[in-house]
Length: 203
Image (cartoon, rainbow, N blue to C red; front, side, top):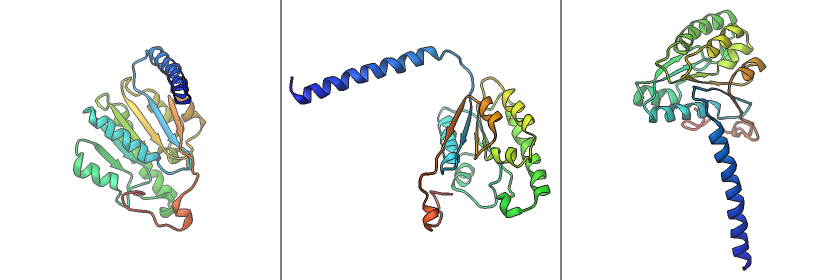
């Protein structure tokens, strides 16, 4: 056996071992229900990942609801695409823009509560297969919404419904409650080098 054949044989054995591990995990996963996911961290891509799941769900003909906290004043590519190409998606935006722009705590709380009323109805509606709560974590961190109220709504949603929460932080209780937590880490960002946010990439 030459060196190339030896490498191929080692690779084959390693992949066989890896496949056995994956297969055993798939076999062990026997529970069938919706999942709750938190996409957090200080890096770029949390909302983008959530909208990727929206596209995935739509591919299967699932019913999707999207509620965006914070964002809303500036049009985004996601909003334009959903409104123009995916009218079947129920999209609601808080519409006040970023909290550091409004600088109006009382007004932000009122809008957060109004927006949560929409989100909580989706979380109680078993016709929704997927609900995305974009930037919800800030509402908990700033105490605009009662944390336990949010946790209870997520915990008591219909069994087949999946929910995705995005945003930095959100607290340990939320992360403990959900099934999956993924952290997007900021290693390098163009904005820090003075490069303007790019339409179609950043918004």
